[in-house]
Image 1 (tube, rainbow, N blue to C red):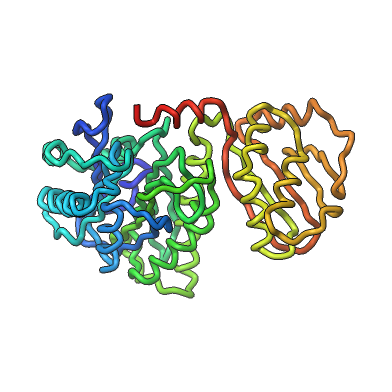
Image 2: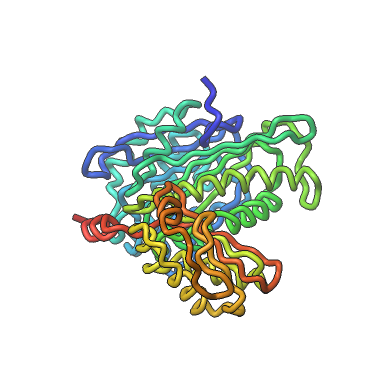
Length: 397
């Protein structure tokens, strides 16, 4: 049965997820996504100066503008290991290429988990012999890339281009160490669109900027973070060129998938009990809007107030004040859900019970209207609970 979400939704792609013994609990920890032919490829990568070895190899290989497979292990970051880490990344690509019958440079590698521990390559080699990528293997692949995630994250979308149905699918992982400029997340996207590497790269960067770079769980970023996309071209549409209506349609579908995955990442933040959406409206500039949204999304005080269902709107305005954005505090209005709690920078006698109900929802929306321009920005984050401390205090043990 054809799945309408995930990395195997687009034509030409298969996937698999297996347990090879990296994780102590025996859970699946090795994922493979394969295309039946060489595909156009693009990627975006963490801006952390420290970078994992598997990431570095993927970044090098994707510069060719093509790839045929992505192999991801979880439970081990393959990072900060010197020559050993580089050699293991190359071996990971070699083993996957041999299994799938493609070139080593056509394999994009990814690793996520504990830093500073060598990959158990014998276990990975044995695990790869068990992989049988299939159309239905996308669900297992999405689960195999998880670390502290509590649920797998998959999405899909389709759009008509040249009278052909063009599909976009994807999977992502990430629950903590999430912040703009890529975070401790790995995302694999696939599409059957006919599109060249240059246009694909531009579309991915724009989609990531509107989605993954709008998510923050805890203000931290990691060393293994990336999003890659492969395009098989099997939809049969005319090749998509930048600046055309076809490009706009494709870019919209890609962004839609990325935004849905990004929201899943925020909602599944470590210890989270609710998704927080921070909206800034009518700012002077887009930069100001983003600065304020980011300050609120990363504020421990704002996030703990959400966890406690406390309508402490002063924390939101305070975060906006130290964001370095330019705005007039005496024009700022603040809303929690649909409840206005602040007008022109001052408090209101608002309905506390209504605000409490808004804070109890699975998704809480904070809105700041600055009445200073036309720029807007949105960020997604989550509340900060006591479980976040426990999860990260015990991560290695």
